[in-house]
Length: 46
Image (cartoon, rainbow, N blue to C red; front, side, top):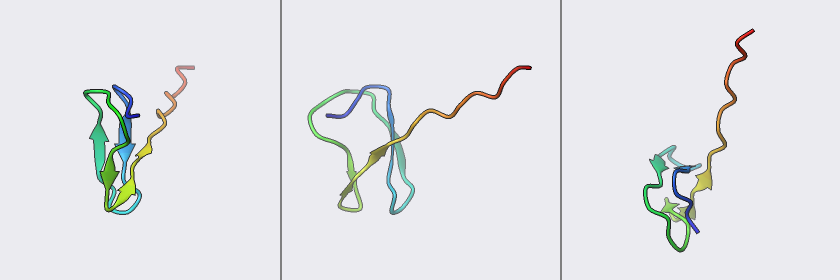
C-alpha cells in the first residue's frame, strides 16, 4: 500500500515521487517496485 506523504525512489533511473493520495499497491518504475525513502536526519544545532 502506498503511504500518503512518503517519497519513493526508483533504484534503476533515480526518479523520485511524492505520494499525494494513499492507495492499494506500490508505485512501479522501470518494471520494479519503488522503495520508500527514509527521512534525512537534521543537522544538530549545537
